[in-house]
Image 1 (cartoon, helix red, strand yellow):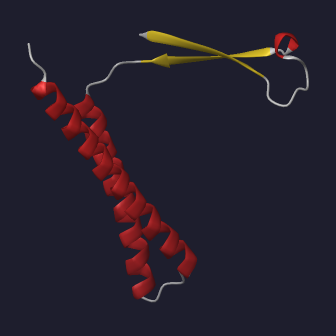
Image 2 (image 1 turned 60 degrees about the vertical axis):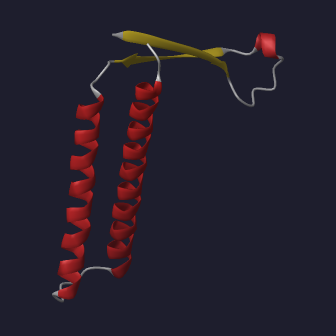
Length: 103
């Protein structure tokens, strides 16, 4: 378990840099296997797409579903999928970079 401490000056305080109060942020980072992170992201994207599809089917069936909610859900699902594809691309690039390293 690694602890990250960040200290930064308050924004817009009007005080000189040395006189500004500081704020301490602490976050705990726990290492995880990239496969588990990717599998979790894949499950989340699948759920988002299923919800969007459910809203579309409800709208097609004539249920009282607002059109803007259907469109927002569809865009959210598309954006989540695009992000997942970019994550996969970065993982593949990292793997290829490791394979090119000489021992």
